[in-house]
Figure (cartoon, rainbow over the protein chains, first blue to last red):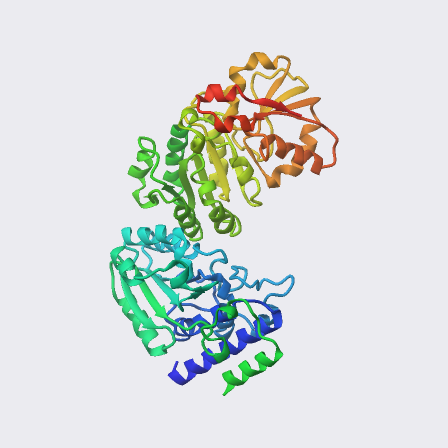
Length: 270
Length: 291
């Protein structure tokens, strides 16, 4: 997929998730916008091996959204790459729907339900070790939030992945530097995060989480190196793509009113 | 019990290539046999029960029937949310094995007393509780679980290798099993798990009563209890667990749930034992009747 098309896909996904969250009056729009470009490269550039017509294909790669509150972005991506009709996205957050506002395995293409933080990476370790033991070459991708790194279960998994040399495991940290009450730094600082991962025995990469080319390059580098699990620290902007939501804590919670919605649509369709 | 468990699991794993054992750095001098035969289906994940439980879910999602093995509350309470979200919600074939059910680790203190575990696990809709009373029941429930892999909790005593019951070839979940020595009395004792040993050691207290065990139970077995309980005039449940949210209260819920008026009594531990450091035998003396 060409750069122009990737950008168009990203815009479509941002528009879709904006509509979903506006209609359902739900939270976490900024968290969802933060990871759109990462997901667009993973799925749009087919870094992840998948077939939307065969969601349970045995030789597929796995993607786990550990920051399950950004499910709107994942659902929108899955619809745009063909797992289900875009009409289904309107079920997001509605009564009796499978499209709950945290990632649900009842939605085609979603491997694992999340919502409570610190579950995705340990589960992914189980997937990765299963593939190793079965001598299969599938990759397992995980996106964690930065605030999520405070969960102790992640550090159990980080030890485990290094000890067992899970080089089929690629963790992406969505490092937008904002969490529920303010900055990560002022809440429970995770710096120096790169050194931490290096000292735990991981290969570590840093990238701009909104630059498609750089994201693609770093993912390809991850796949090319063997012997260690990989961590990509993706520097991102919470709320990316909608100017008045960018880097604002309150958009972790708020949903747009009609005027804000229309302004956001305008920005995304320019 | 733990030796019977590991020996039988090792035997089963020779045929069943999906059996995978994870241990949380416990089981010294017990689990080595499994590790020796099946190094590719064994992992010591270290002292990290949350991770162990989620890893088990990941492995189980790829076709393995995973057994997680640790002691007392470590594989249950320490990782309660991983059990709830990762195993139960996804309905994955993971069997959590806890050695030292009840107060088997008496003198090790409260951290090692598994006396609230039924309460935790019986809240999980998809979970089966396998609580064998002796080695024959360990083998019976293991055969069941490996034939029907599902979210499950296997609660083992530490050193109970005696046999009081007979082997049950096709054990049925929710069914009460009579001891071979029963005489057909209408008043019965219903034991689950390691408290059977206590019942047998105190058998003189239960004259003119038959003994039954219920080794496999859970939320989905509640409906069956109405018709089974009707067969008896009186029932006393026995468990090495706190009364609240335990086995007896499960049975009472089941029977009320089924709209019968039968009352039952429960012999269970009181909260008095939560501050006790003593042998299993001494702590079990503190069991009391709950109406």
